[in-house]
Length: 298
Image (cartoon, rainbow, N blue to C red; front, side, top):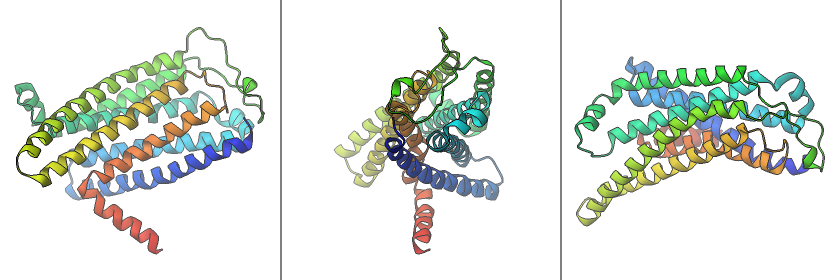
């Protein structure tokens, strides 16, 4: 793959980076201010702050990789690429996935109208349990990243730009990809996220169907919006998880077309998912619109 053919991917990821830095920075600032003003660990601001921070870091790592891959491949090989940068990337990816799962658990317990006793017990305690869920997610991410430093990850031959994609990557011949095995632990938050999302979809669908058969058009619109938000969450989460695992196999030829497509998808998740969070939250919509208007006026 040539340098010119990689530029469109760089432009796409630059747009995703600017969007991600803006929306995640907004989430961090707004929710940090709310936490400081309330002087207590309120569940939703704490969740959104954690998500914003993890995705801000993830966006920075992805962009550093792409900038040096496209413009300074040899410097990236000699000075940056190694166990440390891989473990940092794995930490922010893992934290972002775990925190998104915590948010889905929160939505699942707060919105649906299930009447089982254990569900009601969790529903009334989820706000107090949220800091502990986030702490557990953070420790799990640190553990996965720490273990990934110790494993024997494949080493790439960065080389120079060439039309021959067959020579774009040379990997160590390992019968087992240890990095992929370590990250298989992230299947657990994926399963929890999918289960919570489907429970949310079922509950919202039933509620919307009841409202459409009766009165309350405005409430129906609110729940239809929640349905669309849940589907968007699922799409971004699953697409990032799939591309993350594909990238963790280290089997995709370096600087090839599939390599940059995977990076495009990975960069879309921390920006697109956060945009959906802002647009689906009435408290965040107005200040975000004021921010956009302020930037336009400047």
